[in-house]
Amino acid sequence: MGPSVTRPLSGRVASDDARLTDAVAGLGLPPDWQVRIERRPRRTIGIEVRAGGVVLVAVPEDAAAEEIANLLAGQVDRVARAVTRHRGVVAAHPAKELVDGEHFDYLGRTYRLRLVPGTEPGARLADDWLELMVTPADRPAAGQLVDWYATRGGELIADAMPRLARAAGMPTPTTVIRDLGSKWGLRERDGRISIHWAVFQLPADLIELVLAHELSHLRVNTHSDEFWRELGKLVPDFALRERRLASLGASVWLGSLRASHLSGLG
Image (tube, rainbow, N blue to C red):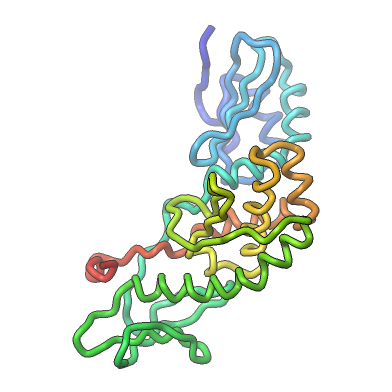
């Protein structure tokens, strides 16, 4: 008998067994999770998080609904972390316009954009404004803001990473800031750490989480229990922060401009 999924019941939970669906829905899982339950010819219960944060629960054909619900109840935090990792930077990120009054975030605080004349392109904070310098011969470009985030982010990392590395009992790794697409951070094969420039729109405690996460990967490559113990030494409340990261990720700007400014990325 192959995989079987029928109608969705109780919101985002889908199963071919109404009793099973009700049992899982009663766990109080986050409402935005997509949980699929499939009965398969197997002896054990398996949990897999697929791309996009879909939680697939593969269960033996004769497993009782209560048994499956009890398993998930003890795995909520672990699955939440996996969902966060698979979502990464949320795909439905906003597009912006490079016009006066547009909103941009930095360290969790929102600033309004103000275009000002300048002799060289660049950006700076001025009270509640994020000022973008525009030369008479040029149009405002998204790349100017990306460079500004990367520069400010580099200054933050230069302060935070040595502190985290000391707490982990490790040498301070070389860290670079670049566009990572759908990832917040990445442990490179050569031992360096890469951080997405867009991370610095987030609150400081979530930036610390991303840095600590990648630093912990230098010691433990996989997301095993050992890895979570290492991360917990640096960020004891990492599970709570990862849930916030998943929530706030949808509002992070990744450099996309609305149609009238698409040429600004050049």
